[in-house]
Image (tube, rainbow, N blue to C red):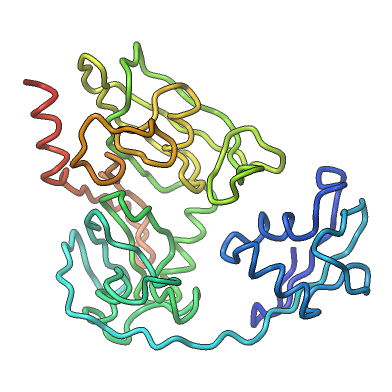
Length: 310
């Protein structure tokens, strides 16, 4: 894929892995930020060309096809700074590390233009945020799910953003999570299974699907209960929903996960998965020194552990 500096034009070249796939399904896989219905609308409006011709959404891709997508100029949505309290783990002139609470969306998106972490950090940092990811994601270099709690890096300038992004790309950042999973894990292990968009449900991810990206999760048993196991998971890679998808793939989904776990949760008051980004460590963008921060377990998580121990 190639993008121009304004990220308004994208070019794709089709190889044998995608031969026969529908055009709209291919583009929704390649550009997960756009819904399939949005992509179909762009195709209908003539914003997508295949080999210079305007196709239908159902067009079956062939090897060597060249796709050109022109996105209309993004309309800037006014993101309002909001005085939302932040649990700050570390802060200096380059970076801010926060402990994100459960239920908070990281950045604005359809249906969530207020109450997000971005609204909070804009109030806290003012204009001191990186702009690489655009107006909707100032300072955001990585993210965690809405119902996942814990450590998140916010970048205050483009230099620090580029430095952290490079470390994420080469998988040199330390990321350790705590989770409670279904079943009794017998021992520690490593899950090495690629992750990609689910072929039927495009809102979900799955292991070992065509065009999946390499993904590695190490898990360590901390404590066993009758029907659950308390684990620490360390990421080598950072794919979407990685821990949730990987743990499901070995038959031990994360407790409370309504997407990848059982339809009925044994703790009805539990809202979302018991997954906490506890430790994050990286090379500081200015000093070059290794910096590590730890977010304490949230109260709901500690309370659940106490119930399981009783």
